[in-house]
Image (spheres, rainbow over the protein chains, first blue to last red):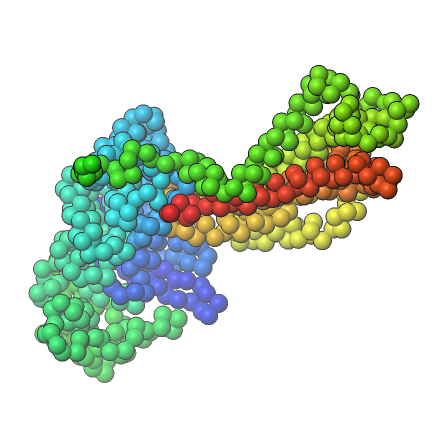
Length: 326
Length: 301
């Protein structure tokens, strides 16, 4: 049985301008110890998916219209806040994008770090402090006893993200949701943080849901990858298959857009056009207006990610119908 | 002299981890005006607090001891600040009056602090319809003519001066509630609150342990501004004859009595007015200094 099964999740935002369908019928699974990457451009619904699962969606305007998120046999979406709090921070943890704003500037690192232990595991302070020292040392912070007494402003960005990771992992969760954990960091620190996450994954054996818009990060880190566009799943497959046997034109276009892989001196490849306005209902494939392989029925027929090869789902109608090679 | 060597892993700033309060204190220390305010306020409070001891052993006069034969005399070696028309020593009355003025200022501020912070924090944190209802209630209270309201309260609580000022504090919380609400709304959008929710913390814990510490700066500043405000209000009420009743005195009462005879006996007005002005200035300077000192973003220097 998978650790987390998300089934036809639908999330919308009810704004004054209308209903924004941010996530539409997203389904995926994560097995124990597996790493799943979700990629997509800004506004593709990857963060909203995770926020919905974690119950962090601001409601209103956000609303979960349907679907299930079954974690270890329990539907997280059906739980009350109080019941959900038994999972959040204990069995499911989350790391946020910007380490500069994710730590409370007025509280010592110690207090923020041991809070999950005090609350969830009812640990006493000295024991929690010992665990915090171990954890800080584990995430590569030197002189942890001393650092514990400091405030966030005395740490650099990379160090703060290490503290965030320590905070998320201190209860040894089964699932870690990382929402673009390296986006706000510079490249060297990015690599360090990814290495650290790999090391912690090995030590604790937890499953990771990594959200990113960086295909490079995802390819080196994840077992499986899911590509999202306009709130829908476009393609999902094991990492090597997704990159070498791509089954969706959008994924192909994303790969072609990586600057490092393009010929130097020429104009860089970009996907023409802009993502669709999610306020309006989209008939057919949301990528159709920007797709190089578009045919007449693309804009008419409903799309859904279906298995087109073993353990490889694609939402492209032409791939599904014609076995179109890409 | 050998060049200092940097050991790997050694904390760069020596072995001193500046705590938030040490840091704030350091910044307050740099601000001479605020420091001046702090010293003046502390000294005055101490003097007023020790008024019974000082009057009995140093001055040798009590605040209610009349000497009709003496009458009003200007400052001299026996009566350092002179006496009033009843022959009472002005310094003794000033010290005793300060006791009441300062205590009332603190009392009313404490009451307004507790009500205002709780009300505003809950309103801002819960948001939505609750927030709207709570804030409209504040608006309605704001719309009441404050002076008349206080005069009414005086009629009810007139006999017990402490109760009166608790009542004034209970009206003074409106601005505090608005300030706190606004700040809470801004801070609850921050990512670290989202992180706290992701850690599975209860809402109450998030509000009181994670959001409120961030409001320390504005709250303390506004509190230091409320103290003089209440003291002025007391002076105003005493001026109208609604405040502290004889033989007790407060700075407001002394100023009022001094003003009545200021052409004949100017010292009866100047000294109480000076004490009042000095305190108000000092509290304002201190408030400004505390705001800068408690701003965590100022710590980057």
